[in-house]
Every structure is written in structure tokens, then in C-alpha cells.
Image 1 (cartoon, rainbow, N blue to C red):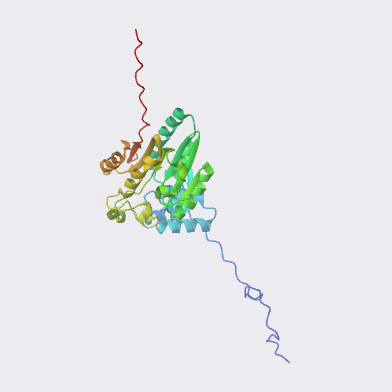
Image 2 (cartoon, rainbow, N blue to C red; image 1 turned 90 degrees about the vertical axis):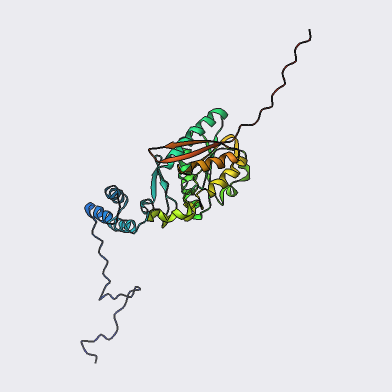
Length: 309
């Protein structure tokens, strides 16, 4: 006869291995972080705008656990835009995935210049403006142009697969198409000679200066979106060399660069037959070179013969 203190059969177990006699305890939810705690944590991590960032994180997170995870990612140095998944750009909320170049506010100056040129082109031609966003990253520039121009035929391209996936979420909703590849090689051949406004937010940080960038940029954004070669103008030169074959007569190429690099950038535009103009914004600390393709040469009509007396 078995002892009254010993079970004759082992108690049944659930599929997860727990026993009804010893159920697994559900983890308690994390207590919510207070606003003051979030601010103090961000400030201790070196976030200059800790109060603003705290408000954004608190308003974005749906649960206390989500907020704690977002604060932890930000403290680890991830860009705020990667943490929340979007960026404010030219009045739009643009999706920005981890590992994708974060659109800078200074690039809104380039967008403003492109909008003006696009509107003038539409008024002159009476047709949709053909716009290409080259080195598009998240597609923020192309999406902003599509939102601002009445009628636009929009294309975007980038060499980074992660950027292309992200851009498709922003550009296709604006009616555009996104391609993966190296500069103009990614574009449909049918665009040759048709582009009215070509925006190319090329990388222009000199290789030796990439290491001086803030950690959130150099560690969490793709190097190909930052490194412009020895003097920062390698990609710009490639773009200006090929652009005349792709621009429509009178079309425009817009490239962002630094004030220090502007004279060399102008030389590259001029060397390739583009008529350059330098524009700048002191407020946004932005410099943009605009190169215009010459209009088609018109054949001069011979003078009418004098009537024979």
C-alpha cells in the first residue's frame, strides 16, 4: 500500500512543462516611466533636447513597456527618427526605417528650390513635371515634391536595399516609382532626355571626416549615404557627368553640398555643360547648386529677301 504522503502517479503537466500544482506566474507589467524620469534618462545620455524628445517618445509609445524599450534604444545612441519610425520633413511625416539615412532639415531648402523650378516648368510646358529623386534614401525629397506640385511624374532610386524598401513606403503612396541601383543605372532608359527636375542628395562628407560625425550618424546610418570620397565630391562629379544625357532641354539638376565645396562643385557643373547657380540659406545652413541644361538651339531663319523693284 503506498504511503499516504506519496502520489501513486505523477501529476499531469501542461504542454509548456508547468504543473497545475505549480502554475507559471505571468510576468508583471513594467511600471510606467514618468515624464521626469524619461527626461532625466535622456539628459544623462547626452540628448540636448531631452524635454522635446521625451514628449515625442511618450506620445508615440502605446504601452509602458514600449516606452521603456524606446527610451533604452535612444540611450544606446539610435537616431530619434529610427526609434519612433518617422521624421517630420517639409510638413510631411516620412517613414524612416532603422539603417536608413535620416532626412535633414537643411535639405528642405533644396526641396523649396526644386518646387519653384517644378512649378515654372509646368507653367511653361503645360504637362506633368518629370521629377527624379536620386540617392533618395527614405524618399523624403521625392514625397515632398509630389505633395507640393500639382501634377508630377515621380521616380526615385538608391543603391541601398534598405533605403529602397523604405522609400517605396513613402514614394509609391505619392504615385511614384522606386528603383534599386547605382545612380542613373537604376532608372528606366525611357527617362533619358525627359527629366525636368533632378534632385540628387549625394553624400558629400570627405572620407577623413566621416569619423567626426555624431555617433548616431556614423554608427546607425549607411556609410554609402555619408562618404563622398577624398574631397567629398566623388558622387557629385559622377552625377554631373551623366546628368546632361538625362535632363530635358532646360531641365535642372539640384545638388546639396557644403559652402566650402561649392567652388569645386560649380566647376564640375560647368565642365559638363550645365549652367550653374549657387543658392544658400543662412537659416538652415544649406548650400545648393542648381545646374540648368541649355535649351535646344533654334535654327535661325534666313532674312526675308527684299522685294524686287
